[in-house]
Picture 1: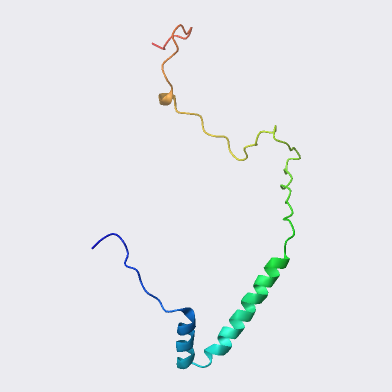
Picture 2: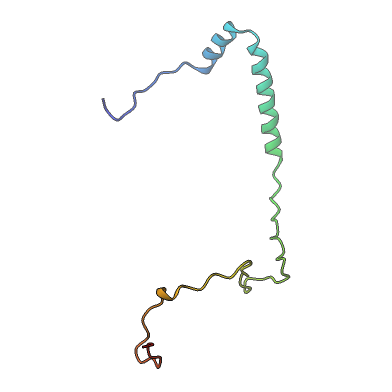
Amino acid sequence: MTAQAAAVESEPLDLVADRLLLLDPDLEDLFESVDEILATALARRRTTTAAPVPIPPAPDPSGRSGPWVAPVAHGRAPEPPRPSQRGPPAPGSSRRPNR
């Protein structure tokens, strides 16, 4: 079997609709109402050509604004690192290790 999909022949939509109407005559009313709804929606969409109105950003609750204001962290401060996570002293440091 090849990777290409086999072409599927389909009947025109008119033939399918005719066959469905033979099976259930009530579908004709359904098709008409769906066509009416879609036509109304399409007409409404074509008449709505107003440009979108930009929405301004919400004001900053702290009263500060502008791109130069750094964000403020709220809540608890992060815990300091454990002493075992520190690196060795810098060369030439005046601190001497405890003996």
